[in-house]
Image (cartoon, rainbow, N blue to C red; front, side, top):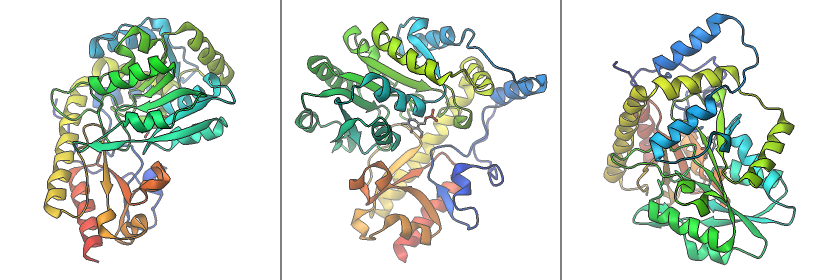
Length: 380
Ligand SMILES: Cc1ncc(COP(=O)(O)O)c(C=O)c1O
């Protein structure tokens, strides 16, 4: 079935977080990470059918954990038990749950930087100490600096947070990189919380996402993996996610926290996730090709332009752009003056004020217009 990603869908009057931010202006918002593409028709049909039934009562998780178990095995050759999979209401709520339920008051965590802002907000909310391990550019990829990571650990360090693929940097970590991190955590006896929400947005052909917990039983037994299909199938507004935790002791603590949230699956998210698992993959294959061509278009533009530094976005629909050569001062304000809103770099860590994150999960004509507005900003 042909799928069109070129169609412009007007998102005004849908209470869209992204599009309503600048709704009274003609500012183009390529910020918050949802995409401007309609969901797969197969998922839309499943949702329509579910709504046409007329009753949207409480939904139990049915065989969802078993379906996810099969999916993890097929996609990543990762064998877990169905009971290792806890159904949750979003990856962000789980990011908040992990420090709250698995860290003691004096424990310390290490977070990568730059990082999706909810990582540090979750630590602050749980009132837990943390330090930032700055990723470094190596062969034009943002990757861990194990020397720096070691230098910021302390006797109270208990948890390492990981975002793989990385938001905002777009790195799809390699097996060697993940093994090095995993083995360090085994040696130092750290827990790992790995946010893998972007796992199904790997853009390079022949590259496969690797869940860190799939690398060995020692790594798995200290890891909580957070996953969801929301991003890859573009239904983040009706969130459903899952945690994989093969360690019964840790899992029990997470289950106690989940029980206190009295969480049950959102009915429509349950329908969408099930439909994505069963029927969504042909659409997803086309989506990845489209995102890859958008990423390549940005690369060509940046090479030609030569004023903004960047690195390869190996995964995600996000480009992490370094504007420091332009000497603009407040990057965000300057871009807004030229009609473009990106996510300000400082949202991902104070040190990154000269960066901005561009969401390229949009029709090509929108992306081309966004790049034109950056050029306008350079000319002005
Ligand atoms: C790394 C990361 N984790 C979590 C989320 C959001 O998760 P959810 O919508 O399932 O709460 C995002 C959204 O941008 C993200 O980039």
